[in-house]
Length: 633
Image (tube, one colour):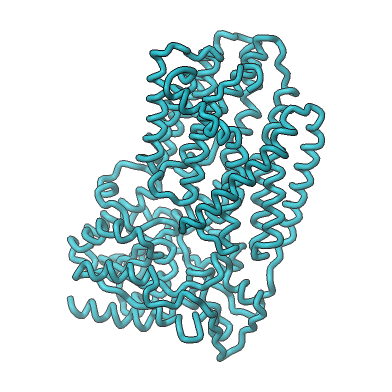
């Protein structure tokens, strides 16, 4: 905090920002808005950096060279070190066909474009693809660095031209960004989450406070209540908000109150406690380390669910962060001549990432039949890249880009009311080709509302009245509207069943019952034991050779009749007389293990998604069940 005086409560505020982010990522359900800690960081950063620039401009000592050199010394050493460690672990410990993707991610992180990369490549921050990326958290650092590439130039120009315009320009740009954010949350939520233009208002709020009060935060004892109120606002945003929107505004306002009035009072005492300040000083290293540790621990068999696992992950994160702070951050922060060394080190690590990117290490799978996978994104006709799966995405040119805001993906006679509607996430997608085959063979009309990464169990009241313009809201609204209009005879649900479904499913299931629908819940197939990696590549890595007439079973400890997902789907079916389960587990399991390969056909995409060849196993059973249900009507 050079040039503006040290304020320990701001380091404490950093702890209030970073700890909830880590708890959120570790899966603590009581803090669903923990990700908002990043927004608290944005405000703190805007205030501190602008305070330094403002003071230097007023003193006549500002230099672009010095400013960016300070940024290099502050940000790059720890980033380069953590990136190098992550790439090393990836090379030696991660399934090798996955490595080139992580190499790409490291380049995006090191060159401060991670937010753009993840927006384009993984989409939803909460989605499965994003959760598997050890550099995902670098998106927020990229937003900051992009901001500080342009902001000092703008501030310098205003200072030279019309100093009195400074507050007005910052306020105007911030309001413009806020307006863009409010619009984007509804229409383009993923871009709004990741990209700089819709995040400027948070950084700008801190900037505006800095040029308004400088370092003259109020020391009036009576004003201490405002900072305590701000702390409460941040806590409320963490506990009661779980999506982009009002929670961010609450946290930003709360952070401004703490910075403006936090030099006295109870809030100051709380945030200035030595333990809290200590965590705040480690906040950057904690943030850098926590996510790679969480992601890379999974292949090592360490889950996030058990209390002992969480304790190990927390302790590891702290120890790695402490070491990085003491051995990397502190020694480089004020050594002015070290910038060339830092930049050279960064280029060397980037070279390692580039080498991993350009040298994909796939196993030879030419002996296997083509892997065909069925999935739909929010735009069902778009091309979904699948290089990490080494698969062909099954495409249907008849599907219209706006199908999910209308009648869904129609199969059969589109001039008649569908007898079958299919809803689901990626597991609903994977069954869709088999369901479509049955519908066509029985001359039935069907409509599909399945989207990867999107839970079908929504709160009906939230989406029945159409207010939002974003694609996901349109998808759910169209689904509810057309089911209510069509009253289909059968609604099929394909889902990666989880414990949360017991609480989440009743709203939509009761809605379907009110429409007079019979509901068929498709049981999940057994899960392969090797984690979320490409199954065909894994089979090849084990030296398994396909042969006509030969089946290959993968041993698994998960073959249990009490498997969580199986119990959940049966619990739901037993709760409603109009619902029943379509068993599938037994089709893929035997004493020898899980059926993964039949002749040249691989059945699985990864550990729990079936390829087209595997999903068609349910066709005879599904045809019999649909015929039975429709015969009863």
